[in-house]
Image (cartoon, helix red, strand yellow):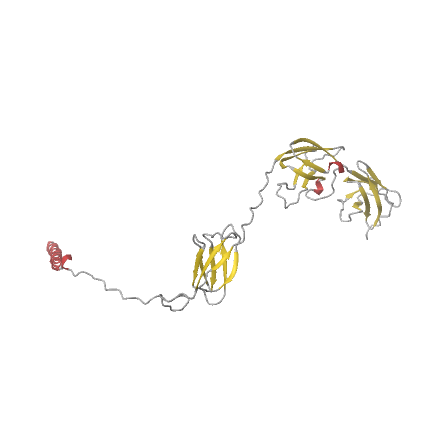
Length: 339
């Protein structure tokens, strides 16, 4: 065992000694030859972007000098001259004297765009030339109209309400009379009433409005308008904390009987505005006594139709007055149940 350790030690010593002797035999950095790069060869000149070899000293026939001026003759500095040439774009900017040079134009006509804010853009056909092309820009357009100051205030009010039912969720709608193209700031607005018929518009723009009131089932629509004609126009120019809105609304009541004089339960009743056939009120049904009521009906003439089974009857022209309840005397009929 001891003999093996001795042999291992001798081998390690021999390896280290050999490394030292080899290192001493290498040339020192100062003795190494210096690296000198070879002289680069001269490259041929680049090919002309348009594929045409030219003599740099020869006159060029692909350029155009442009002078941009205003109507009064003053030069325009910094105008952009832009020409689309094939798949690329040529451009230049005018200097203090309004001159700019486009180089690399193709033979024939090209489309030149001249941009110089705040002038309007201009386009024209150009072609290479030794003469200077003078371009007069159109006059500067007038500045855009300033948005007028929008004055806003609070508008609050209440419905002049009569009746046992609640005015909650009735919708008050304000439509500005000014054209939407006018920069007045007035936009259509709407607000719902509370149980007392009160409503509030915060930050309402001053202006002239048409005022309408819609029942809950018609919210978001345009009819039936229940406002009295005297209150349909609002001239809002200052804060209003309590504006009473007078309503002009009536109702239709009636009784449905069969051909034996007995009340009909569950008969379907529909009211339609005679002047506007598309304005149909939500259908209602008769109670055990055969009675029905259509609420929130503006003044006008209505056709009332009743259906039960395969039978029915109608009243063609029932006049409703503001604040009144019109009675619809529907002719009795036989329901004739469907088989």
